[in-house]
Image (cartoon, rainbow, N blue to C red; front, side):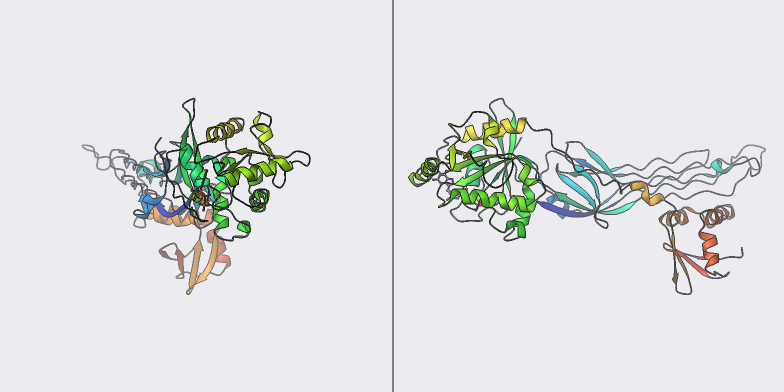
Length: 450
Ligand SMILES: Nc1nc2c(ncn2[C@@H]2O[C@H](COP(=O)(O)OP(=O)(O)OP(=O)(O)O)[C@@H](O)[C@H]2O)c(=O)[nH]1
Ligand SMILES: [Mg+2]
């Protein structure tokens, strides 16, 4: 796996599925038969728009150049009962970690994490039926065919959330980026001032057993981050999708314990389960005498324990809850130096041990209220418009486009449907008169005699 840069990323795209092909109106031609039976075939289905996870992508940047995606329309049906060819689906690639929302409602449509995972975001329209489908014993020569159903359209808000196994957190300037650089081939910017890192850097660490883990260097958190101080909220959000934290304390700080508590407090105030994430705590810059002295001081005072000498099991090293360590147990801290490499592999191995003990990460559940077929329901609303009436009904807006207004039988089917859905009776209750205009989508129809 190549080194990658990943950042919090958003994009808005418009998707449009293919329209269904029109059904055909056709009659068999046979020798000596003036007019044979109906043989108009159905239109083909419109193609779907489908998001698919490409594990080699790690940003949404490609959507800056292209924001509209359309699947192919279905082909029209033909005579001799020929069904139109279905439209090809349109695949749109997204990186793992993409949360997909309907931009209008904000509802989650899906959470795409696994390579190859797919999500249909706009369904292709059904093909219109040809007249062969409408033959009945009483009507052997139906003058009717359906147009194809329009494809679904929607605007999607895509949000890329960082997925890293291990997140490195700490105050600004603690040495987080330096640690990432020591453990992986990532080369983040490192400097002796706070807020050098403004977006998370990702790096891939190779373990002894040839596995890899992804580490994220999270921008520094400060007091008030959970209230939005600095870019605090954005920074905290990145931690959501890490599974284990390396909590890094600056060995040059004048109060390491306070630093540790500040970061934990901000994570707790942000919520979203950040406090429940297991932590491995390390104090860095141990190559410097001042840092060594600070570490020895705290160990001497019994405020922190030297994790090298603490019990070997990983559980003694992680403090699931925020705040201070258990009352009669000092906080276990591993002294490290990213500069010399002292204990950095040990730190990684301990984090991986904790990682391996965790259950696999959960996906965001698509919100059940969002059923893509919801729009197929028959609910409607009628409002006054101009001198007439507007019917707002997704179902009817599709049907009006599927109706062949040049064919009497088609128009009759539409009118029967108006009655059976209750829309016709409701219009009459509202006092509609022959000659009044009824607006449905882009169509204007004239109300006839009942
Ligand atoms: N001597 C020594 N210096 C270190 C060590 N780790 C980091 N530093 C120095 O500490 C300073 C800050 O390091 P960074 O890695 O940029 O710190 P950061 O936590 O990423 O800081 P922000 O991105 O601002 O939050 C730099 O000057 C580093 O060279 C270390 O192990 N030993
Ligand atoms: Mg940094």
